[in-house]
Image (cartoon, rainbow over all chains, first blue to last red; front, side, top):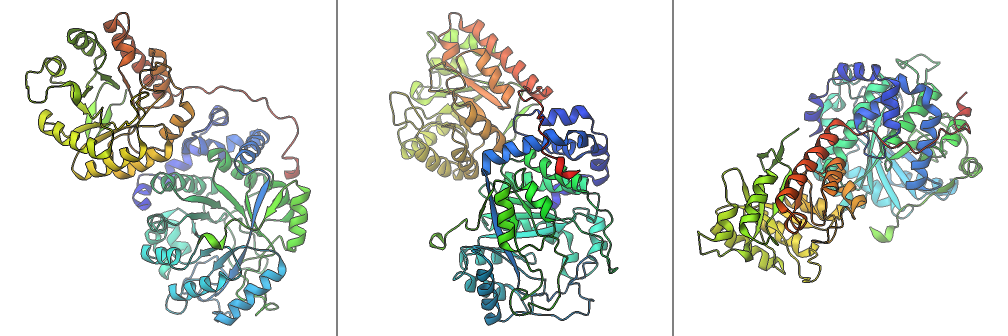
Length: 373
Length: 255
């Protein structure tokens, strides 16, 4: 289990090691022909790599072109419930927020699916929930997946960590194609302060969820760190360790990485501990691509249009479009605002597609066929 | 240099020797000595299993050497499993180099029968070192079956052609959780050194030494090449720089 490996990796020593990287370390990593180690990754995300951004961009573009060509996978998230027993201090859905809670009914879910198909030719859908196993548990998620097959070819979930048997059940019996889960931060002690109560407060259960996905034979696993909690260079290095660990142990799985940036909220509430600059986000994206040529790098609509369009040819391989980040946001509760976070790129699907075309990229809406399930 | 560990057993030497094709058992014995190898493979078909004083075996066995009987000659999983059980009885070791090659001309390993035999033999308690194609997926499947190493080939056996499968060996080395022993086709010490520089955990050499003008000298040359290659790998080779710095700004949009 990865939590055991993580015990051998000191957060503070890793932070110091990243800060002490030199230009030579960066050049060594950039000149390697494959097989980059996590140590090389640390050089690439270190402050010492900042002057090499242009070279990193060129390498990242080259590797992305080799493995992914000129395509960008497009998906859309659907929040089916915001009912949640957790109290993540940075999240709009946390338990003490006196917001209206929704668990979409089956007919509401189908209405959402139909509304999404009106927006664009989406075939990749990501079903998102909070964590409330009693009211919206595995059975509820399974039902939403069953209903989605009439509308979508590829169905992934972003839900609470599940038992191995439940991942297996959803994949084998219900045709679920993949799982995304955000560790949020790999800082074990600080994790507890961001997630003080609820099931999510258990760091080990969450971080070992990825092992359970691997053991269940899930074909596609997405990792995620929220940028704005702990030192991003160290947190991303931990995610790089995690990626290598999973690849070593569950070698038939395809992996993706997600690192959305939190924004300073104007209405008070939780403020991120830092804001990642555009240059830093680009450095991080290039570092992941140079570190791992195959990993899917995903940008959500949290990122502004200008950044998404430009990064589409430099390393990013998956994007969401015209996302609503509230339950029922495409139809049922279309005009009520209960978002989990703020969307920055609020362009329509057609506008996103046009932007990608201008960047010389082909948006691909389909990556799987129901006939193969 | 780091020690090589296979199935919990430590080895100083990363050079494995084969024992076919020598023109005398004496010369074979001297070559083993000169190579400082600690792992020697021997074809069961060459040994008189009922005779504890078999001449060839007598020239191989010594205290610091792990004997690695191989199933060379087996054409199916079934034959290899039978041969393995006979060898465990005869040699008193559960270590086994698994070889299944139905093709008598190039002696290329049969991936399907090899995997089948490996799965069965691991369950029977053998320490299985399978000879296989340089196929990264097959190597992962063998690892999952519980083999102690994988032994992908560099080129057709006996060909002395060197690292013809280099691109695939690199992937295998990158992905493997068990030691990777490059087997077959290494014709010169420089080939062995190159394999070790790539990060192979060990190499197995037979023909190149056995048919050399002076096998004992050649054994020394391979010993030194393997040490050099491993040292270079552990020291961390510099990479070849083949890219000029891009002049068109890709990152101008970042401001």
